[in-house]
Amino acid sequence: MSVSELVRAELMRHDWAALRCGCGDSAEHVPLMFEAILTAGTPQDMIGYTLDNHLEIGTNLFEAAVPAVGVILAALAGDPSPLARDHLLDTLCHLVSGDSHATEQARGRTRLGDECRLKAREGYWLIARIGLAGSADDAETAADICECIDLDDERSRYYQALLRKRMSAKTKR
Image (tube, rainbow, N blue to C red; front, side, top):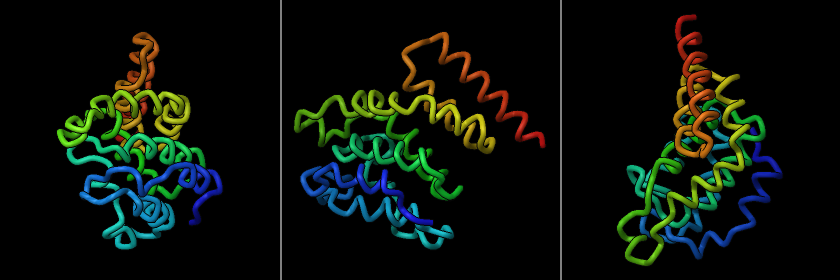
């Protein structure tokens, strides 16, 4: 698997070295993490290269999380491997359900969760498509993401129900 030009462009759009990361360093290494995830052929290839504890720790978000949402959406718009797709969807779910880490709040970045949710709304239909076409786990994660990001309660309830129905149908197969 390779990294698409769209993902590369989205990665290059940001000054990662100027952003704070959950590991305590700058987020300068986050693009390498994305590239490793998107090119991994096996879970072993991803050892040491996950976004866990970099963008968020237990849904407590760091500054690098906001631009990472755009990178995740760019990657999901392509055809990532199931391994990469699962990791990216799970990460996106943590980002849109999170809030600023205490260290970010102390620096005045109190709305990182809102910023992530706002950015993720740009990919609403992409997320719904992945949930409808993907595995039962994809459907469940997509439903959770839609619940967090959709401001239209009626549409949100409809798609959550549809995705959860698809999840149940796929689980029974």
